[in-house]
Amino acid sequence: MKEVRVYIIANLQIHDADRYREYEKGFFPILKKYEGDFITFDDNIVHMEGNKPMEGRVILLSFPSAKHAEVWYSSEDYQTLSEHRRASVTTTLTRVSGMPPRN
Image 1 (spheres, one colour):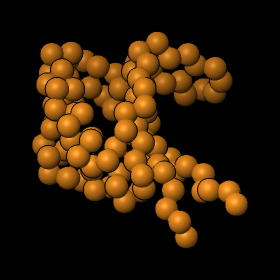
Image 2 (cartoon, helix red, strand yellow):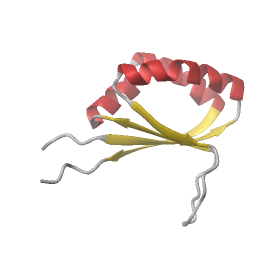
Image 3 (cartoon, rainbow, N blue to C red):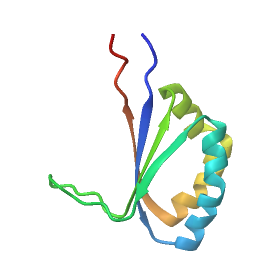
Image 4 (cartoon, rainbow, N blue to C red):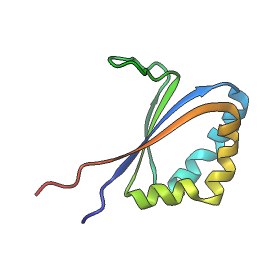
């Protein structure tokens, strides 16, 4: 089976903006190191339906495969950096697999 691109949906409620900025400063070089792509973020999300609306910031990332995402997330450099995120925001991270190529 061919690997498919995966997407990370991060939902953050920022409680300590200064500490979170420390996380942001180191985030992009580590994301690129593991072949991740930053797609977008939105601080003004609109809830359209359902009884569990997201609040705060939503960030979309992508990786070439689930393995790439797992290696990035579990890497020592990302886990060390993520201590700033964990100390400054409430986070929900979700990984979603993309569609396989159609023939």
